Figure 1 (cartoon, protein in one colour):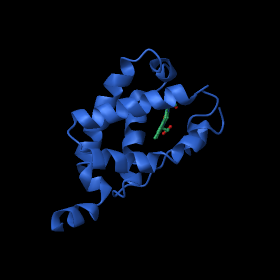
Figure 2 (cartoon, rainbow, N blue to C red):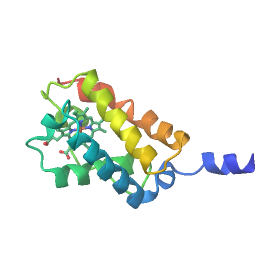
Figure 3 (cartoon, rainbow, N blue to C red):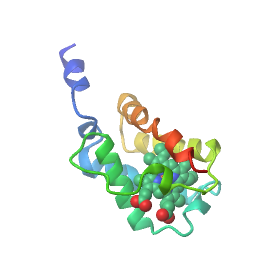
Figure 4 (tube, protein in one colour):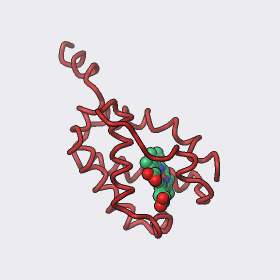
Amino acid sequence: AGCSQRQSSQALFAELGGEPGISAVVENLMYRVADDSHIVGFFANTNIDLFVASLEQQLCDISDGPCDYQGPPMDRAHQHMGLDDSHFNRLVEHLDAAMIEEGLPLRTRNRLFARLAPLHAEIMRLQ
Ligand code: HEM
């Protein structure tokens, strides 16, 4: 019981492995996106280095890490891309698979998804 109490009070950022952990997950995610013909087209004109840096910063920020997300709000960042739930769910599946492969336990993955879930409405707002 002592252990789980300590674990539940640990910042999500630390559970994710800090910046190296987040960056490993994001890199793993990008290989999966690159291999997925259902969504890779959205990134055709994207500067991947900038995208990766921005996503890492956002994940650090929402996991209570020492970062301030400096990118555009999620509705503007994704406006008029024609995204629907099939694209969103695919990205979430890849993110989960990436976190599993990087060794993150269910509870950590679920904690991150709980913080990403509210972004769904924002991302879909201007489609
Ligand atoms: C929880 C879901 C998502 C999160 C947290 C997220 C996060 C981000 C972030 C942080 C950026 C960078 C904004 C910038 O600095 O310019 C971004 C841009 C982008 N996102 Fe997402 N995104 C999500 C869902 C999706 C989905 C489902 C797709 C398509 C399958 C997608 C495609 C893109 C593309 C193509 C860009 C780059 C736009 C550009 O080239 O400037 N995103 N997203």
